[in-house]
Amino acid sequence: MRKISKGPWTRRPGTAVLLVTAVVLIAVIVSFVIWMQRTTSPAQDGATPTRTATPTPPPQASAGQPTREGLDAITDTRVVFGHQSIGMNILSAMPAVFSTFGLQAPQVASVDWPAARDTDSPVFAEIWVGTNGDPLGKISDFAAKIDAATHPYAIAFMKIGPLDITASTDVSAVFESYTSTMDALAQKHPQTTFVYTTVGLMTEEAGWSGVAASQVGVPATAGGSDNARREQYNALIRERFAASGRLFDVAQLQSELPDGRIATKPVDGVAVRVMNPAFSDDSLHLNAAGSQHLAAGMLAVIGRVATERASSSPR
Image 1 (cartoon, helix red, strand yellow):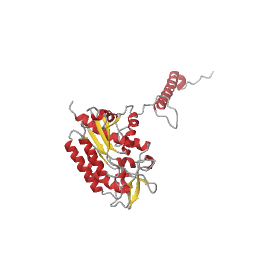
Image 2 (cartoon, one colour):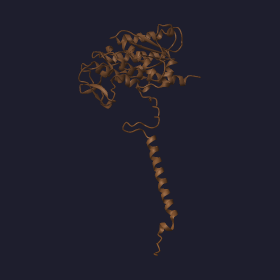
Image 3 (cartoon, rainbow, N blue to C red):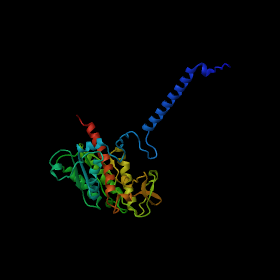
Image 4 (cartoon, rainbow, N blue to C red):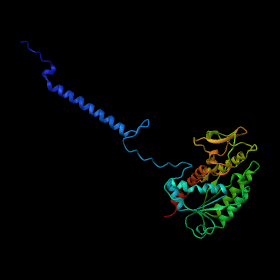
């Protein structure tokens, strides 16, 4: 009988078993790693994730977005805002902004109501100032009502509107009146922090376009454009007050487009800010979208100032 030759596998059967076991173990490990990657990575192409999604973090603060801390600080502060109808548009959207943070907005009270007049308790008060078309009268009326307040306010500000500045307005005179009045009020009422504002814009039915912020400018002459004259005034306001951190830039907020560009119309070859047409239904007043966008911007500034005041107050 022929003797069968023994190869390496027949001489060491244990080696084959070990190799097979190792291959199986590696396959199991690789399968486990792949499973973990699929269940911990975000779903792709609309696939449903196999694990609970991480909760969306709260929105991060930006120049035009308030913070929860700021909104909380506002509810503990005496604030007064002088305005006309567009200001009312902005105030009407405050509850919507507060609700995005799960907070209750403070009730807006007239300065003549007991809640604002008879106590020094926190309140968000409003003053209807002057008449449209008379910016100097509005500024003077605001100053008189601040001086007449029985109890001082922690934060005070006013805005003039688009109807107050047109192509024929002497913006230097309005700027001088506004700045000298606000400076005088700050001297007379050191316990009050004054916030500053630009004048609002109007929409343009035709000829407007969105451009990058770096392309926006201010023409040397208004060229018959009301918005160009308003932006000449706003340029003076920004130069004087932007660095203070207390500028509510109404015109900037009104001109913002969803993609980050700015709504503009050319005047003498310069791209001049105009109001985003999606923010108004009549070219002047703010609709719901415009009101909420401006309210968020206003509350961002007022909330920041209120927070700074609270952090610097003696405890």
